[in-house]
Amino acid sequence: METYLGEADEKVIVIVADGGLNKGTADQINDVVQQAVDCGMKGVIIDCSKLDILSSAGLAKLLMLHKRMQQHGGEVKIAGLQGMSVQILRLARLDKIFQLYPDVSQARLSFRDAK
Image (tube, rainbow, N blue to C red; front, side):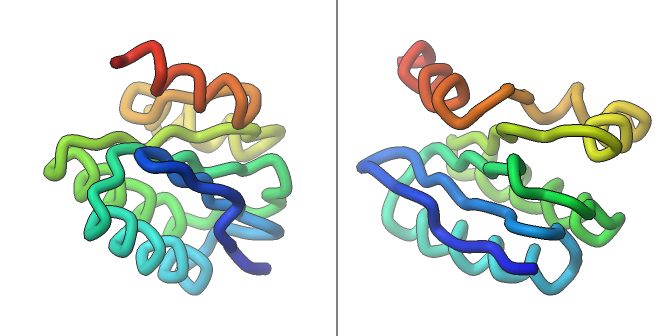
């Protein structure tokens, strides 16, 4: 289980969550997002298309990332979430906080529409 930088442009960074999103991998995302904020990026897309496990620690980190990006005038969007992970987000009512997209392309387009 790992997270890695998928792609980036001048305002949006895509982070791929591969395998699971738990405390350890969420810490990796946290580091990448901090660097993105420091560089002035306003958008983060978490690509969950390869995600198998979403733990409560992973959800907590996502909320912290959302808050940090919001404080800097940015957003975190989630793409490609499937199966039980979608159910978990909906049961926790986090789909009211995060915008969910079927894939990275649509999430990226939503940042363009917001300009």
